[in-house]
Image 1 (cartoon, chains in turn brown, orange):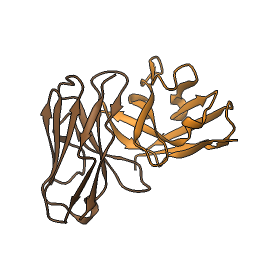
Image 2 (spheres, one colour):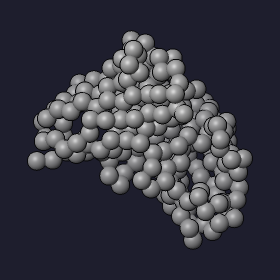
Image 3 (spheres, one colour):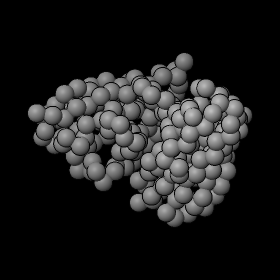
Image 4 (spheres, chains in turn green, purple):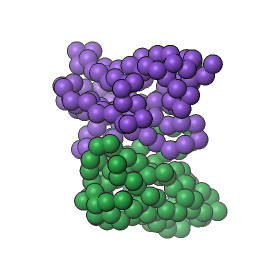
Length: 107
Length: 117
């Protein structure tokens, strides 16, 4: 099973600041790595698929990069609605696995 | 509008069974893979099961293998999750999820399963 480790666990930032979230895989997943956003009381939403492709309707301030074992989700300028929990997930093999999540909170 | 809607959650005793269902609408259901993902209270996401578009291939997390069975009914745009031998650690919100581009691109609102005596 591929283990995904996200860092930091919590990121405290102000609106307008840049957020950089990391996801590290226990083995190479090539570029088969996705990112999701989850707000309290809601289902997750797909943000980025295959490392760097924005899903439909996702604003351009969200971007993804990386390949192999190291991946980054960047939010260039945080909007109030971006404060949430973010998960990475690999689709390289079975079982599909998620990282433990990074909470982006208002400083 | 493309939507997924789960049903069948509730309170069940340890060792009991429950069957979850999910109906898809607003898109060509039979073309796409489907999954179940769960989230225990205050915890992260856990993928637990997958079925391909024809229902001929399934996959399970080790935590549910041998106890849960996924199936699909394309005629009615539905998938099901039969859950047997339920344990306290199965308590979670269960999400029905569509797979497009090998990503989880559409999620239902979830149904809560509570395993407790």
